[in-house]
Image (cartoon, rainbow, N blue to C red):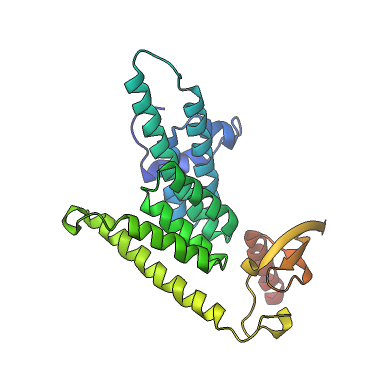
Length: 260
């Protein structure tokens, strides 16, 4: 492959494997920057699981590069600079994978990726801060979210407004908006007259994010059955999981049968 950056029109070429090379082997032949561009493309068209896989491959590649960096050398300043650059790339890719996890409602994983990115950036990545706070909100950790966002915003108060880039100012506004939403949700929880004791008593339809997925009970041709526990009531249920693409295929098949 030549050294030019990948263009959107190149993406399908890299996905259409000829059978002689696995997808994992294919990914290894791409730089982490190419994997990021490819991941961004798939994320933008809604193929989140593909994007997740590409970002993960890029993260693995960066981590290997960081491990292989020499610890001692005469050109220490150059080595430190290379490590800093790799760390910056790792922060970006962790933020991107956090976004994928959030889209797939894997909120714990989204929080873990964002937290790691924020710590690696030494608290300088506002994108990582946003991803972390949003994941905390999705997990109903409103108090943690409020405390974290307030600390982030306080640490930035020392900067004069004329020193803040327009892009940074926009990110700060988003963080402030998220802080207000967190405070509102936290207050609503505190003022709640009673705790929910049963899913059957919920006035709002439960979401998959309200449950913890447990052990597998079995699998069939089109689905798998797992144990799940409601995070608030601790009630256990059997959950049938059908892949979205499989469900769409079955729906089309049913329509075809109905029309015959």
